[in-house]
Image (cartoon, rainbow, N blue to C red; front, side, top):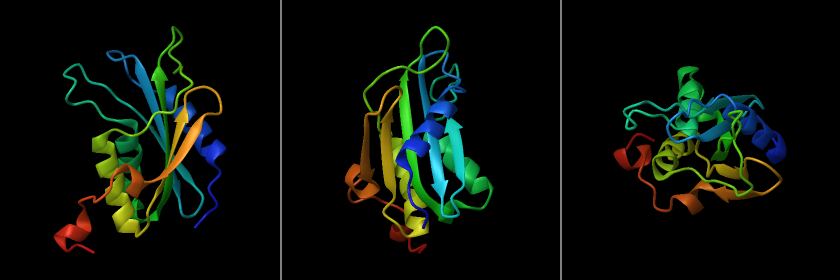
Length: 150
């Protein structure tokens, strides 16, 4: 398990957020997933005009990890977000946390990797960040273990 450099993981999430496609909400979100070998995979939210088809940054990053066959290698995840300024960069000094759907998706990776994943919630700007364990954000989670998959 690699050491978690929270500031570096938040910085990667911030960089990812600059690539968010958020023309409707104007709320950019970036996520950075740390893998057990120390590599980082990022994702940004991707909105759709039909709203319900939009993808959250955390799910984009985790789907990328999964498509590489590495879902069991997730060691931590960081997320940041904020309203976009005129240049398209996220703003805000208050940490954001994953939505309920994303918490459930993160739980899939947590159960497959056998860890209570650290979730680092950072602000789009500044040093504010809060670190949680997934079990704090999603107690009594339902996942692969409940289906006899583990």
